[in-house]
Length: 280
Ligand SMILES: Cc1ncc(COP(=O)(O)O)c(C=O)c1O
Image (cartoon, rainbow, N blue to C red; front, side):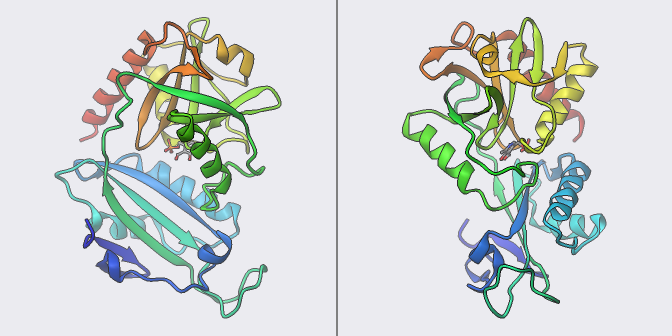
């Protein structure tokens, strides 16, 4: 692992040799964006959707996209090993300026870094996990996949310290998303998830689940979810590229539904695995 090959600014090199300046704006300001793209048996999953979100994030921070979609694919592919399920971590920052200044530097190339890691199947997947709820203390541009993740980190750490896998974030009485995941609730037999606004990261897994729900005639809606309704939901899930669909069986110490993964989760989990296979 230590000597794995990573990509940095046009070069492939061993991880320990990949270095950026301390004046890089990613280091100094968290001035950059990122993507996490899963790859199953060497096939990048929903690559176009991830690259579209990358373009949206770059536009959101007013940073020019340094590569075309074909170039991105050509850059990322050599990092993959078809023998494993993996994920690419891709980060782009506003580059290294001559001095520290909040305003954008002129004529400075972006820093582009990508590495690949194996996906370790999430331990809590089949048994379900515990979560806590917290007031969402992040900023108002959560639709941008910014590397500035301090808010998310503090939420996740609070969950971990209470022996929980995720923190569910609540704003003005509504369930928003997880610290590093989107959220779904089964309420009155309908699979619900909050709509895409600046309050949430538009998750690729979220979109895939909604497409699959439609295709398999599972009733669903994209609508605001009152936290009080989420507490009474028969099922709650969090979703992300690396953990997929994780059932929450306990929230703030109280069982969700019957306190075990529910039937809608079981159905959707099975459908998602079959869909992934169908793309290989
Ligand atoms: C805040 C947040 N919301 C949602 C997601 C899920 O997005 P995706 O399904 O594209 O991994 C993530 C992923 O890390 C996240 O950090």
